[in-house]
Amino acid sequence: MAEAEKLRVAMIIQSYLPRLGGAEKQLSALCRRLRNLDIEPTVITRRYAGMRRFELIDQTPVYRVPAPQPKPLAALCYIFFGLLKLHKINAQILHAHELLSPSDLAILGGQLLKKPVMVKVLRGGGLGDLDKLHRRRGGRARIRRLRENAAAFIVISREIERELAAEGIEPARCFYIPNGVDVDFYKPIPKAAKKKLRRELKLPEEGFLCMYSGRLAPEKGLTFLLQAWEQIMKRHPDARLLMLGSGEMESSLRASADKGVMFGGFVPEPLPFYQAADAFILPSETEGLSNAMLEAMACGLAVAASRVGAAADLIEQGENGLLFPAGNAAEIAQALESFIRNPGERQRLGAAARQRVCRDYSLDQTAEKLAALYRGLGGKEAAR
Image 1: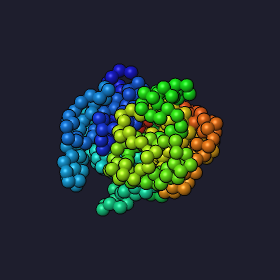
Image 2 (image 1 turned 90 degrees about the vertical axis):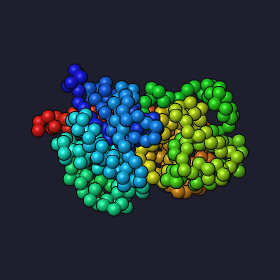
Image 3 (image 1 turned 60 degrees about the vertical axis):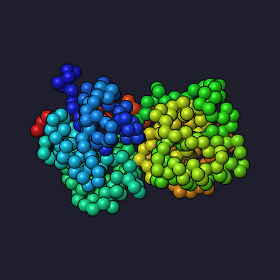
Image 4 (image 1 turned 30 degrees about the vertical axis):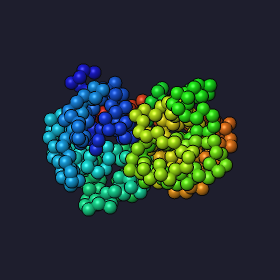
Protein backbone atom coordinates (compact mmCIF):
# COMPACT_ATOMS: atom_id res chain seq x y z
CA MET A 1 0.00 0.00 0.00
CA ALA A 2 1.29 3.45 -0.86
CA GLU A 3 2.39 5.67 2.01
CA ALA A 4 -0.48 8.10 1.41
CA GLU A 5 -3.00 5.23 1.68
CA LYS A 6 -1.78 3.94 5.02
CA LEU A 7 -4.15 4.33 7.93
CA ARG A 8 -2.78 6.94 10.34
CA VAL A 9 -3.26 6.29 14.05
CA ALA A 10 -2.33 8.68 16.86
CA MET A 11 -1.06 6.71 19.86
CA ILE A 12 -1.71 8.87 22.94
CA ILE A 13 0.17 7.70 26.03
CA GLN A 14 1.48 9.18 29.30
CA SER A 15 5.12 8.32 28.62
CA TYR A 16 7.15 6.56 25.94
CA LEU A 17 10.66 5.43 25.17
CA PRO A 18 13.29 5.86 26.46
CA ARG A 19 11.16 5.51 29.61
CA LEU A 20 10.59 1.78 29.78
CA GLY A 21 7.50 0.48 31.55
CA GLY A 22 5.15 -2.28 30.49
CA ALA A 23 2.82 -0.04 28.46
CA GLU A 24 5.73 1.71 26.75
CA LYS A 25 7.44 -1.56 25.87
CA GLN A 26 4.24 -3.08 24.51
CA LEU A 27 3.40 -0.07 22.34
CA SER A 28 6.92 0.17 20.95
CA ALA A 29 6.89 -3.48 19.90
CA LEU A 30 3.41 -3.12 18.35
CA CYS A 31 4.33 -0.02 16.34
CA ARG A 32 6.98 -1.98 14.45
CA ARG A 33 4.49 -4.67 13.50
CA LEU A 34 1.64 -2.32 12.69
CA ARG A 35 3.73 -0.59 10.02
CA ASN A 36 4.06 -3.95 8.29
CA LEU A 37 0.26 -4.12 8.29
CA ASP A 38 -0.13 -0.74 6.55
CA ILE A 39 -0.90 1.13 9.76
CA GLU A 40 1.11 4.33 10.33
CA PRO A 41 1.40 5.04 14.09
CA THR A 42 2.47 8.37 15.57
CA VAL A 43 3.06 8.72 19.31
CA ILE A 44 1.98 11.76 21.36
CA THR A 45 3.34 11.73 24.90
CA ARG A 46 4.62 13.93 27.71
CA ARG A 47 8.05 15.53 27.59
CA TYR A 48 10.18 14.81 30.62
CA ALA A 49 13.49 16.38 31.55
CA GLY A 50 16.24 15.81 29.00
CA MET A 51 13.94 14.56 26.25
CA ARG A 52 13.51 15.99 22.77
CA ARG A 53 10.30 17.58 21.53
CA PHE A 54 10.33 15.30 18.51
CA GLU A 55 12.30 12.30 17.31
CA LEU A 56 11.95 9.14 15.28
CA ILE A 57 12.25 6.02 17.41
CA ASP A 58 12.56 2.88 15.31
CA GLN A 59 10.81 4.78 12.46
CA THR A 60 7.89 5.83 14.67
CA PRO A 61 7.38 9.63 14.95
CA VAL A 62 7.26 10.64 18.62
CA TYR A 63 5.96 14.07 19.66
CA ARG A 64 6.50 15.10 23.27
CA VAL A 65 4.41 17.92 24.67
CA PRO A 66 5.15 20.07 27.75
CA ALA A 67 3.79 18.78 31.06
CA PRO A 68 5.21 21.05 33.80
CA GLN A 69 4.43 20.46 37.46
CA PRO A 70 2.27 20.66 39.52
CA LYS A 71 -0.04 17.88 38.31
CA PRO A 72 -3.09 20.05 37.43
CA LEU A 73 -0.90 22.27 35.24
CA ALA A 74 0.77 19.21 33.70
CA ALA A 75 -2.60 17.74 32.73
CA LEU A 76 -3.79 21.05 31.28
CA CYS A 77 -0.62 21.54 29.20
CA TYR A 78 -0.68 17.91 28.07
CA ILE A 79 -4.19 18.33 26.69
CA PHE A 80 -3.69 21.81 25.18
CA PHE A 81 -0.41 21.07 23.40
CA GLY A 82 -1.57 17.55 22.60
CA LEU A 83 -4.53 18.98 20.70
CA LEU A 84 -2.16 21.10 18.62
CA LYS A 85 -0.17 17.99 17.72
CA LEU A 86 -3.31 16.02 16.87
CA HIS A 87 -4.35 18.78 14.48
CA LYS A 88 -0.89 18.77 12.92
CA ILE A 89 -0.56 15.03 12.28
CA ASN A 90 -4.20 14.66 11.09
CA ALA A 91 -4.51 11.03 12.16
CA GLN A 92 -7.62 9.14 11.10
CA ILE A 93 -8.00 7.35 14.44
CA LEU A 94 -7.13 8.49 17.97
CA HIS A 95 -6.02 5.65 20.26
CA ALA A 96 -5.62 6.49 23.96
CA HIS A 97 -3.58 4.17 26.16
CA GLU A 98 -5.15 4.58 29.63
CA LEU A 99 -8.38 6.08 30.97
CA LEU A 100 -6.77 9.13 32.57
CA SER A 101 -5.19 12.12 30.76
CA PRO A 102 -4.60 10.23 27.49
CA SER A 103 -8.33 9.51 27.23
CA ASP A 104 -9.24 13.09 28.13
CA LEU A 105 -7.02 14.29 25.28
CA ALA A 106 -8.36 11.70 22.84
CA ILE A 107 -12.03 12.44 23.63
CA LEU A 108 -11.59 16.19 23.25
CA GLY A 109 -9.52 15.72 20.10
CA GLY A 110 -12.13 13.39 18.66
CA GLN A 111 -14.89 15.91 19.28
CA LEU A 112 -12.99 18.84 17.77
CA LEU A 113 -11.46 16.99 14.82
CA LYS A 114 -14.40 14.64 14.17
CA LYS A 115 -12.25 11.51 14.50
CA PRO A 116 -13.13 8.12 16.01
CA VAL A 117 -11.62 7.40 19.41
CA MET A 118 -10.59 4.09 20.90
CA VAL A 119 -9.32 3.59 24.44
CA LYS A 120 -7.14 0.88 25.93
CA VAL A 121 -7.74 0.19 29.62
CA LEU A 122 -4.36 -0.65 31.09
CA ARG A 123 -5.36 -2.05 34.47
CA GLY A 124 -8.43 -3.27 36.34
CA GLY A 125 -9.25 -3.83 39.99
CA GLY A 126 -8.05 -1.71 42.90
CA LEU A 127 -5.78 1.09 41.67
CA GLY A 128 -6.88 0.28 38.13
CA ASP A 129 -7.92 2.88 35.57
CA LEU A 130 -11.61 2.98 36.53
CA ASP A 131 -10.88 2.80 40.25
CA LYS A 132 -8.57 5.82 39.95
CA LEU A 133 -11.22 7.79 38.08
CA HIS A 134 -13.85 7.00 40.70
CA ARG A 135 -11.58 8.36 43.42
CA ARG A 136 -10.80 11.64 41.63
CA ARG A 137 -12.81 14.82 41.52
CA GLY A 138 -14.87 14.87 38.36
CA GLY A 139 -14.18 11.19 37.76
CA ARG A 140 -17.79 10.23 37.14
CA ALA A 141 -18.11 12.96 34.53
CA ARG A 142 -14.95 11.70 32.82
CA ILE A 143 -16.35 8.16 32.74
CA ARG A 144 -19.60 9.50 31.29
CA ARG A 145 -17.67 11.28 28.51
CA LEU A 146 -15.87 8.05 27.74
CA ARG A 147 -19.12 6.13 27.62
CA GLU A 148 -20.71 8.71 25.31
CA ASN A 149 -17.77 9.35 22.96
CA ALA A 150 -15.41 6.37 22.66
CA ALA A 151 -16.11 4.19 19.64
CA ALA A 152 -14.20 1.21 21.03
CA PHE A 153 -12.58 0.00 24.24
CA ILE A 154 -9.59 -2.36 24.20
CA VAL A 155 -9.70 -4.72 27.18
CA ILE A 156 -6.76 -6.92 28.17
CA SER A 157 -8.56 -8.96 30.84
CA ARG A 158 -12.05 -10.26 31.54
CA GLU A 159 -11.91 -8.35 34.83
CA ILE A 160 -11.73 -5.07 32.90
CA GLU A 161 -14.52 -6.24 30.60
CA ARG A 162 -16.78 -6.74 33.63
CA GLU A 163 -15.86 -3.34 35.06
CA LEU A 164 -16.77 -1.57 31.81
CA ALA A 165 -20.09 -3.42 31.68
CA ALA A 166 -20.82 -2.18 35.20
CA GLU A 167 -20.33 1.37 33.90
CA GLY A 168 -22.99 0.85 31.24
CA ILE A 169 -20.61 0.32 28.31
CA GLU A 170 -22.16 -2.24 26.04
CA PRO A 171 -20.18 -5.39 25.07
CA ALA A 172 -20.37 -4.50 21.35
CA ARG A 173 -17.87 -1.67 21.96
CA CYS A 174 -15.47 -3.80 24.03
CA PHE A 175 -12.77 -5.72 22.15
CA TYR A 176 -10.69 -8.32 23.96
CA ILE A 177 -7.17 -7.79 22.60
CA PRO A 178 -4.64 -8.84 25.25
CA ASN A 179 -1.02 -7.77 25.25
CA GLY A 180 1.31 -9.91 23.18
CA VAL A 181 4.88 -11.16 23.39
CA ASP A 182 7.51 -11.88 20.74
CA VAL A 183 7.66 -15.67 21.07
CA ASP A 184 10.58 -15.93 18.63
CA PHE A 185 12.70 -13.65 20.84
CA TYR A 186 11.49 -14.81 24.25
CA LYS A 187 12.16 -18.54 24.20
CA PRO A 188 13.78 -21.16 26.43
CA ILE A 189 17.33 -22.44 26.11
CA PRO A 190 18.51 -26.04 26.59
CA LYS A 191 18.94 -27.14 30.19
CA ALA A 192 22.66 -27.68 29.62
CA ALA A 193 23.12 -24.00 28.68
CA LYS A 194 21.53 -22.67 31.89
CA LYS A 195 24.57 -23.31 34.08
CA LYS A 196 26.88 -21.43 31.72
CA LEU A 197 24.42 -18.54 31.44
CA ARG A 198 24.10 -18.30 35.22
CA ARG A 199 27.85 -18.10 35.51
CA GLU A 200 27.95 -15.28 32.95
CA LEU A 201 25.23 -13.40 34.84
CA LYS A 202 27.00 -13.95 38.18
CA LEU A 203 24.11 -16.01 39.51
CA PRO A 204 24.39 -19.21 41.59
CA GLU A 205 25.12 -22.07 39.21
CA GLU A 206 23.29 -24.65 41.33
CA GLY A 207 20.02 -24.65 43.22
CA PHE A 208 16.52 -23.34 42.66
CA LEU A 209 16.36 -19.81 41.23
CA CYS A 210 13.04 -17.92 41.18
CA MET A 211 12.74 -14.43 39.75
CA TYR A 212 10.49 -11.40 39.82
CA SER A 213 10.72 -8.62 37.25
CA GLY A 214 8.83 -5.34 37.47
CA ARG A 215 8.42 -2.15 39.44
CA LEU A 216 9.29 -2.26 43.12
CA ALA A 217 6.03 -0.62 44.15
CA PRO A 218 3.42 -1.25 46.88
CA GLU A 219 0.75 -2.65 44.55
CA LYS A 220 3.11 -5.43 43.44
CA GLY A 221 2.70 -7.33 46.73
CA LEU A 222 6.45 -7.65 47.28
CA THR A 223 6.28 -7.40 51.07
CA PHE A 224 4.23 -10.62 51.06
CA LEU A 225 6.74 -12.21 48.70
CA LEU A 226 9.63 -11.49 51.08
CA GLN A 227 7.60 -12.88 53.99
CA ALA A 228 7.00 -16.05 51.98
CA TRP A 229 10.66 -16.28 51.04
CA GLU A 230 11.66 -16.28 54.71
CA GLN A 231 9.69 -19.51 55.06
CA ILE A 232 11.30 -20.97 51.94
CA MET A 233 14.80 -20.23 53.23
CA LYS A 234 14.16 -22.17 56.45
CA ARG A 235 13.59 -25.33 54.43
CA HIS A 236 15.73 -24.65 51.34
CA PRO A 237 18.74 -22.51 52.31
CA ASP A 238 20.31 -22.89 48.86
CA ALA A 239 17.31 -21.42 47.02
CA ARG A 240 17.58 -17.89 45.69
CA LEU A 241 15.08 -15.18 44.75
CA LEU A 242 16.19 -12.67 42.10
CA MET A 243 14.31 -9.37 42.01
CA LEU A 244 14.80 -7.21 38.93
CA GLY A 245 13.50 -3.66 38.77
CA SER A 246 13.53 -0.38 40.62
CA GLY A 247 10.97 1.82 42.32
CA GLU A 248 9.87 3.59 45.46
CA MET A 249 10.12 0.47 47.65
CA GLU A 250 13.64 -0.54 46.67
CA SER A 251 15.37 0.76 49.82
CA SER A 252 12.85 -0.73 52.24
CA LEU A 253 12.81 -4.08 50.43
CA ARG A 254 16.59 -4.31 50.46
CA ALA A 255 16.63 -3.52 54.17
CA SER A 256 14.10 -6.23 55.05
CA ALA A 257 15.17 -8.96 52.62
CA ASP A 258 16.67 -12.26 53.68
CA LYS A 259 20.20 -13.11 52.54
CA GLY A 260 18.68 -15.46 49.97
CA VAL A 261 17.26 -12.50 48.02
CA MET A 262 19.29 -10.84 45.27
CA PHE A 263 18.45 -7.42 43.82
CA GLY A 264 19.48 -6.86 40.21
CA GLY A 265 18.18 -3.30 39.76
CA PHE A 266 16.59 -2.07 36.56
CA VAL A 267 17.48 -4.27 33.56
CA PRO A 268 16.44 -2.94 30.11
CA GLU A 269 16.17 -6.43 28.65
CA PRO A 270 15.65 -9.31 31.13
CA LEU A 271 15.66 -12.13 28.53
CA PRO A 272 18.86 -13.85 29.75
CA PHE A 273 17.58 -13.81 33.33
CA TYR A 274 14.35 -15.53 32.30
CA GLN A 275 16.39 -18.14 30.47
CA ALA A 276 18.63 -18.70 33.49
CA ALA A 277 15.82 -18.98 36.06
CA ASP A 278 13.70 -21.97 37.12
CA ALA A 279 10.45 -20.15 37.91
CA PHE A 280 8.76 -16.75 37.90
CA ILE A 281 6.64 -15.18 40.64
CA LEU A 282 4.13 -12.31 40.33
CA PRO A 283 2.49 -11.47 43.70
CA SER A 284 0.68 -8.29 42.57
CA GLU A 285 -2.31 -7.01 44.51
CA THR A 286 -3.58 -5.33 41.33
CA GLU A 287 -2.49 -5.86 37.74
CA GLY A 288 -3.50 -5.49 34.12
CA LEU A 289 -1.75 -8.03 31.92
CA SER A 290 1.88 -8.26 32.98
CA ASN A 291 4.32 -8.19 30.07
CA ALA A 292 6.93 -9.73 32.39
CA MET A 293 4.64 -12.68 33.06
CA LEU A 294 4.07 -13.19 29.33
CA GLU A 295 7.81 -13.03 28.67
CA ALA A 296 8.57 -15.51 31.45
CA MET A 297 5.96 -17.96 30.16
CA ALA A 298 7.28 -17.61 26.61
CA CYS A 299 10.71 -18.56 27.99
CA GLY A 300 9.25 -21.78 29.38
CA LEU A 301 9.26 -20.80 33.06
CA ALA A 302 6.77 -22.19 35.52
CA VAL A 303 4.80 -19.19 36.77
CA ALA A 304 2.98 -18.57 40.03
CA ALA A 305 0.83 -15.43 40.13
CA SER A 306 -1.81 -13.82 42.30
CA ARG A 307 -5.33 -14.25 41.02
CA VAL A 308 -5.80 -10.64 39.83
CA GLY A 309 -6.10 -8.95 36.46
CA ALA A 310 -5.44 -11.13 33.43
CA ALA A 311 -3.51 -13.81 35.32
CA ALA A 312 -6.71 -15.79 35.78
CA ASP A 313 -7.39 -15.56 32.02
CA LEU A 314 -3.91 -16.74 31.10
CA ILE A 315 -3.19 -19.37 33.76
CA GLU A 316 -5.21 -22.53 34.26
CA GLN A 317 -4.53 -23.76 37.78
CA GLY A 318 -2.22 -26.77 37.72
CA GLU A 319 -2.28 -26.93 33.92
CA ASN A 320 0.15 -24.19 32.86
CA GLY A 321 0.95 -22.45 36.14
CA LEU A 322 -0.23 -21.78 39.68
CA LEU A 323 -2.55 -19.09 41.08
CA PHE A 324 -2.83 -17.89 44.66
CA PRO A 325 -4.93 -15.24 46.47
CA ALA A 326 -3.40 -11.76 46.51
CA GLY A 327 -1.86 -10.58 49.77
CA ASN A 328 -1.29 -14.05 51.23
CA ALA A 329 2.29 -14.91 52.14
CA ALA A 330 1.42 -18.47 53.17
CA GLU A 331 -0.13 -19.23 49.76
CA ILE A 332 2.88 -17.72 47.97
CA ALA A 333 5.21 -19.92 50.02
CA GLN A 334 3.09 -22.98 49.20
CA ALA A 335 3.33 -22.31 45.46
CA LEU A 336 7.10 -21.80 45.65
CA GLU A 337 7.48 -24.93 47.76
CA SER A 338 5.63 -26.90 45.08
CA PHE A 339 8.05 -25.66 42.42
CA ILE A 340 11.09 -26.60 44.49
CA ARG A 341 9.92 -30.07 45.53
CA ASN A 342 8.62 -31.13 42.10
CA PRO A 343 11.15 -30.22 39.38
CA GLY A 344 9.53 -32.53 36.84
CA GLU A 345 6.13 -30.93 37.37
CA ARG A 346 7.75 -27.50 37.26
CA GLN A 347 9.20 -28.25 33.85
CA ARG A 348 5.84 -29.57 32.62
CA LEU A 349 4.10 -26.38 33.73
CA GLY A 350 6.76 -24.27 32.02
CA ALA A 351 6.39 -26.12 28.73
CA ALA A 352 2.59 -25.77 28.90
CA ALA A 353 2.97 -22.06 29.69
CA ARG A 354 4.98 -21.49 26.52
CA GLN A 355 2.44 -23.42 24.45
CA ARG A 356 -0.37 -21.26 25.83
CA VAL A 357 1.42 -18.01 25.05
CA CYS A 358 2.45 -19.11 21.55
CA ARG A 359 -1.13 -20.11 20.80
CA ASP A 360 -3.02 -17.09 22.10
CA TYR A 361 -0.69 -14.27 23.14
CA SER A 362 1.85 -13.74 20.39
CA LEU A 363 2.67 -10.15 19.48
CA ASP A 364 1.81 -10.80 15.83
CA GLN A 365 -1.72 -11.85 16.82
CA THR A 366 -2.15 -8.71 18.92
CA ALA A 367 -0.99 -6.49 16.05
CA GLU A 368 -3.28 -8.19 13.54
CA LYS A 369 -6.33 -7.83 15.81
CA LEU A 370 -5.56 -4.15 16.39
CA ALA A 371 -5.02 -3.52 12.68
CA ALA A 372 -8.38 -5.11 11.88
CA LEU A 373 -10.10 -2.90 14.45
CA TYR A 374 -8.34 0.20 13.11
CA ARG A 375 -9.47 -0.63 9.59
CA GLY A 376 -13.04 -1.05 10.79
CA LEU A 377 -13.02 2.35 12.51
CA GLY A 378 -11.12 3.89 9.61
CA GLY A 379 -13.76 2.70 7.19
CA LYS A 380 -16.42 4.43 9.27
CA GLU A 381 -14.30 7.60 9.27
CA ALA A 382 -13.89 7.46 5.48
CA ALA A 383 -17.65 7.10 5.07
CA ARG A 384 -18.40 10.32 7.01
